[in-house]
Image 1 (spheres, rainbow, N blue to C red):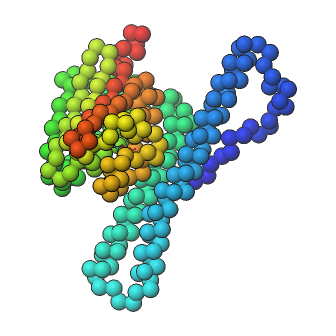
Image 2: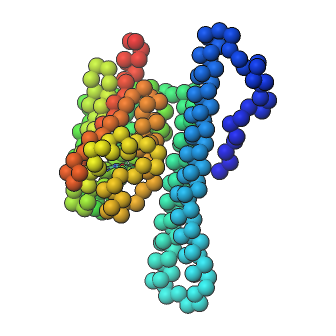
Image 3: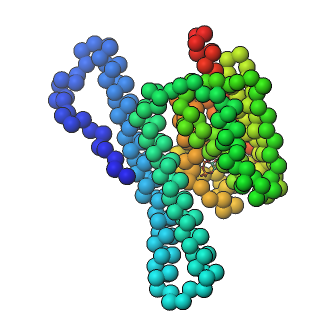
Length: 271
Ligand code: ADP
């Protein structure tokens, strides 16, 4: 990953940047906020690259070294080691995908590609992606979709990623045999998506923290459930960039509900 330095190529002398009016002062302030945001994002991305990619890449290296050193691997051992390599490579690929999405969001690229998107179809597609895992874990999945199209203005790939992250967590943090519910309803102005599960939950004081980059809840860590702490941060960024919001409530040990609200395209046109 190559990250560009966020310094201007040709920095202005400080005196030239001195504000001479309120408008200039506010422009300078907003520029300063933007640079600070970019700096934060740069260090976030570097942190992810440094810490999170080390584990899967280290695992791949160790396994490959072991395979090269061992003369006669049984076919079963060979298959098991190759599966571990594949799983570590998938983890690394997932982290890189997350990084690229964060970078795209940060660049503000998505505005140019916003178009009308029907959330029902998008959500159905995201649910479909989880079906094999849900079945494997003997979880019960209930879905309820709005009777009418839920059309918003947005970037389908980013919205799909946001839904996939929330659904992926619901499956991951719910033990075998648990329940997951997905609901999409619309009102005059908004689409509401609720993903409910009967899983391990998180502590009430973590309700805001879990949307911070890298934050991993105590219960998930204690139970050894793997993760990077990036998924919900991406969800929040994507949803907010579509003019919406996301929140979560939970009872430790008694499940969680993640709620996303997005403004309908019709409400934007009326505004
Ligand atoms: P990750 O799952 O990789 O740790 P996320 O950013 O997706 O990262 O989630 C942040 C934290 O929020 C998780 O570590 C977990 O504590 C909590 N969390 C997210 N989804 C759920 C869920 N469905 N049930 C319980 N806890 C959850």
